[in-house]
Image (cartoon, rainbow, N blue to C red):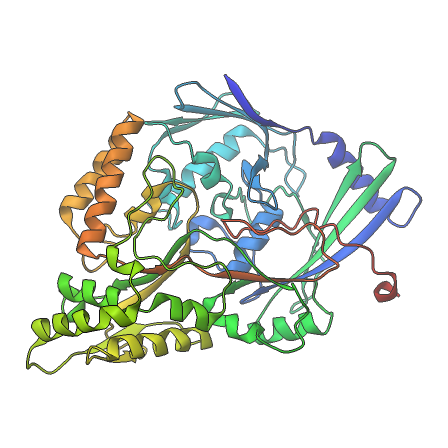
Length: 495
């Protein structure tokens, strides 16, 4: 047996209660960090009820931790489980639950946690990540404080999935921390999250206080510039242009090295998107670097494959040869291909479903220019109007290639390949890692050949970070803990 991590938290929990009761007395320090997440007001919801908004995900991570959680750098650290073991064959994960209570004072038991986790992956669950845990065979409470997750086949990325807010442990609208949600909040006011942290080397308890609110991107940026927000989370390519203001502090805008999918998928089984050769032509015609330059994202690289480098168990994808050729040198051949595909027929109008936002208008403008060179007309699909393509903009929840590929199964997308689905199901059932990885690699190659997805780049995720916040770090999951932000106390602001 091997143990990835261990933490004792009971002493900290007791000290937290003491810190709350004696705040302001000797031995206690406090600091407050004001956090805004772009979107609607955060609410504590059951992840089994459906997809989470970004404000909901941030709140869940703060007050309803999972068995494990991410630290600032995206590494796995203990959450509700204080330690865990993985059997040598990788088929069993055994977690020891910390001694904890729900906010109403009831003891947290392994039986409760097992039931709540089983609910998240049940057939009726609308948790969008439940498919990523298809290898789970059983979730079994072994004692009041020990829970075992048994797998049908090894999954080395299991902890990354369990650390996502979609698997936060929520019971009757209550979580177990790491923060406590204040109950005396008036409607419309930011939520207040509190916790006490002890320093084992000093007789000091630090009370961490975070105010959390959801705001429009315009309000969030304005609040940050005015000094009313220390941290803004949840930015995407769509709202990135709002950060391009002259008085933005240097180094305040930070980009996550996010991994995942950003590109176009056919939205219907007929029309121009239904033809594989047309899809290939449209992919080749996109000037990806010009789009990246227009958005102004440093370090972002063009991509033309579903998978990206560095995923578990599969070789790095091989980009199509044309990606390395400047687009000006490709255009003559592309024009010839367009003439062969469309001939004297009227060139189709290609409609793309995008969010209504300035970043989308930049993307649409680039597509109109690049596909317009082929004689095509590009328009944004109006609400309720059939689209030929829709945008996928999603951060990968783990380093497994399976998540990338299973997004394009039949039933999930309008254009698919049943034989590729067979490979994916075979990979899921495979008990030998090499066999599973080989099937996933084959599926990825077939998907790229069929151009089931027009990849453009990695997803764009940004934050605004004040110099007062010391504990923030970017990471590939674009998940940002609210703990230990390490804000320096601003005496002038406090006065």
